Amino acid sequence: MCISAVSVGLLLFILWMLAVQLCGQTNRQRDGDAKASSQPEAAVPKLLHSLSKRFLGPISSPLPGPPSLPFLGNMLDLAQEHLPIHLTSLAQRYGNIYRLNFGNTTMVVLNSSEIIREALIKKWSDFAGRPYSYTGDIVSGGGRTISLGDFSEEWKAQRRVAHRALQRCTMDSLHSVIEKQAHHLCQVLRDYNEKAVDLSEDFTVAASNVITTLTLGKSYDKRADQLQKLHDCLNKTVSLWGSPWISALDSFPLLRILPNPPFSRLLKEVGRRDKLIGKHIEEFKTLTDTHVHMTTVDLLIGGTETTASLLNWTVAFLLHRPEVQNEVYKELCGVLDVRYPKYSDRDRLPYLCALINEMLRLRPVAPLAVPHRAIRNSSIAGHFIPKNTLIIPNLYGAHHDPEVWEDPYSFKPERFLEGGGGSVRALIPFGGGARLCLGEAVAKMEMFLFTAYLLRDFQFLPASKEEPLPDLRGVASVVLKVKPYTVIAHPREQ
Ligand code: HEM
Ligand SMILES: *[C@@H]1O[C@H](CO)[C@@H](O)[C@H](O)[C@H]1NC(C)=O
Ligand SMILES: *[C@@H]1O[C@H](CO)[C@@H](O)[C@H](O)[C@H]1NC(C)=O
Ligand SMILES: *[C@@H]1O[C@H](CO)[C@@H](O)[C@H](O)[C@H]1NC(C)=O
Ligand SMILES: *[C@@H]1O[C@H](CO)[C@@H](O)[C@H](O)[C@H]1NC(C)=O
Ligand SMILES: CC(=O)N[C@H]1CO[C@H](CO)[C@@H](O)[C@@H]1O
Image (tube, rainbow, N blue to C red; front, side, top):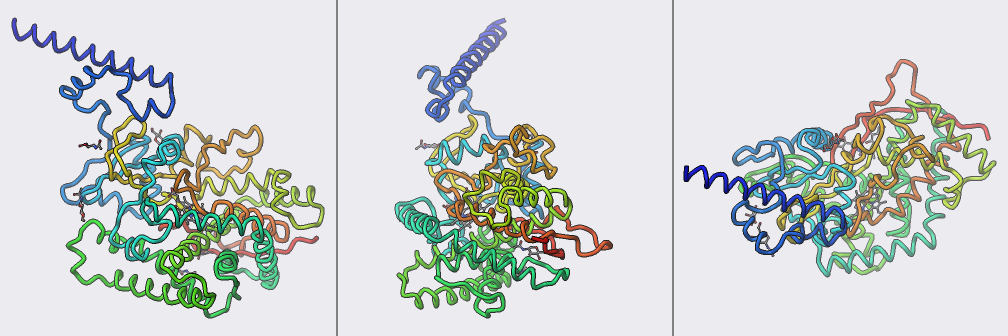
């Protein structure tokens, strides 16, 4: 009898606590501002709060996630070939925010635009860090790149300098630099005389020439030895670094004493890269310190593969949907008559812009952005996130969220036209907040001008009737790449 009285009392107490918590939650939702959600307990009186902590543990529920093996944790999930798609499928099971264990760190994967915005933009100062990694440290000259450097005064200064320099370029000369490369690209395509070719190299050359013109003051011919060397080296660095043999070094320090051929190759490539870039920086008598050097590396890596890969994807999708090409062409002819487009024409070219947005949605070239690190205790979507947690913004997942996008897996530029139901707010291919892609403005202008020039001058046709159209699933590494395909660039009559 005595026992049941106690348990009834306990039950009542628990119910009462729940009621208080629910009240607190609805209050919080009503305020809905940043302050309330960063202090989830604010609505609960102090005494109750400490009581609840003592008896019920922290108020926020633990994060869900797949079962974690001893020693390995969720390493097997992370070794999946197509990581963005795998992480998105885990979200269907565990929800829009879930955890994975990786060595001794906890990773939290964010799968919807709203949650990603909460972490990266609203609470930017909590999540602006980058995780330390053994291999990242070597690739970035001791964390001195903008993209991999941790949040610090030094990093802020470096980012500010690079940002200002890019802004100055954007205002002064970027448009003419891109125009020049776009004209050149069209000429190269015309010279193929409707042969079936793989255009990936030409796209890469065009994109990297924009960046080398901005940073090193010159552009290169496709056949130039220097350029070939630089591309080869950047490409190898990026793909080797994505290798599981190398990422394992970060979680299992013991492995570092064993011989590891891919890692030795990576070190060799990093050495080559630094020699190549160092030579240029000396040549142009710029500051020769590691930060400047590493900023150049950042812009080259960030600015080459990304833009080229997006152009690659655009052509691949357009081969599947020729009527979209014709629609863009009609719009260009109607609005511009015969002249080439300028970036300032973009408001008058809604269909072209819709096509670019749809490509950024379906194939965000950095599908998992770059990992962030919580630099202090914080919370996301009401869950407690301790300091040093790794945050993975799954941009690919957010761009395929069925709650936001109708028929998320289909290619439908029309969704971004007025009344088409596409949400520009939910489109976050460049991340956001303190770590927003530094090249966003450059990339947007490049994508607009390159796509406009190409579709004004050419109709892209499949290589032959027999060959299948390009595979749209893609090969995932650090960036999402298209599988090799060939295409015919058929000049339009002007
Ligand atoms: C379509 C083209 C591009 C896309 C979709 C893209 C996307 C991204 C994303 C998602 C991030 C990570 C943001 C985060 O950590 O949350 C990033 C970072 C970065 N991007 Fe881009 N990018 C593009 C082009 C460029 C270009 C052209 C440049 C250089 C001119 C560039 C330079 C950088 C740099 C330096 C960072 C590191 C920023 C930091 O950590 O503070 N990107 N980009
Ligand atoms: C995790 O492991 C690294 C070495 O791999 C170590 O430096 C770090 O202190 C560990 N972190 C925790 C929280 O134990
Ligand atoms: C980049 O590297 C990958 C793997 O190392 C290779 O298959 C690919 O052909 C390279 N691409 C270029 C353009 O060099
Ligand atoms: C952060 O949270 C941990 C619990 O995970 C706690 O032990 C620590 O005191 C907190 N740090 C601060 C500064 O609140
Ligand atoms: C572009 O596509 C080609 C196949 O045509 C592929 O070989 C290449 O690696 C891709 N390049 C980029 C930068 O994604
Ligand atoms: C793209 C995708 O599958 N998103 C999932 C994210 O998580 C929610 C559950 O909260 C699923 O409904 C979505 O399907």
